[in-house]
Amino acid sequence: MPRPRVFVTQPIAESALARLRAVADVAVNPDGSRVLDKAKLIEAVKRCDILISLLHDTIDAEVLSSNPDLKAVSSMNITPDRIDLAAATMRGIPVTNIPAIVTDATADLAFGLLLAVARNIARGDQLFRSGIYPGSQSNHLAGAAVTGGTLGLVGFGRIGQAMARRARRAKARARGEWKSLRWPSRFARSQRVRASLPCRSRRARRRRLPDTLGTRLLG
Image (tube, rainbow, N blue to C red; front, side, top):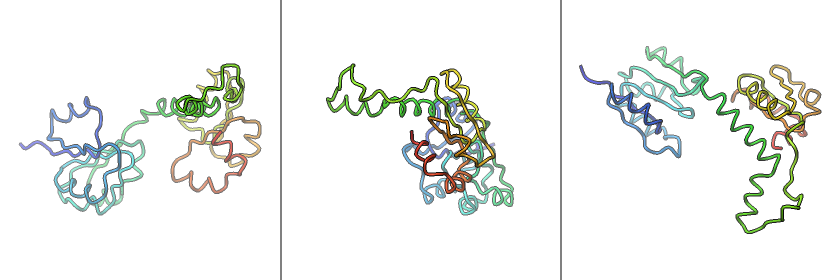
């Protein structure tokens, strides 16, 4: 029985590729610096049985129809919102996705960015690399304290709640909001505001985001 042919749109962990190669012939797009363009994606799909797509790959009806023998699409995304599920269903192509395994990693990065903005870490790095050091007694890069402050969380799902847990460990208060759009009153006392909204909702809600709160989103 011939081994299935698998195409992966960008490099993934070698341990995962080793498991795949044990049961299939695997081809990987070696360029992990950019999303594979549609023409190249279609050409690859024509030569595979199973497609493994990443977060920003768009798998629409044209891509799915490029190979009548495509057996499955495996998305490395929690919500396969860039895959045309209706077109896949019509062609009898199963689509799989991953569980929510990056919640803590995303919250770590978000909290790290919050600290970097509050304490001018990136600005300090730029100054030091350019040979400017204002001195340890200077308040030029002091920034603002996170400890004891209030963090407003717009979107209180998995990632928002993970951010709240990190805020509590930093002795900061967290105010979370999920469904309500009463942002100005809800977060009036927040020194920092972080938005964790689904991509489609974010565009719709950003149009209703007050200017003052939009400024706080960036620190």
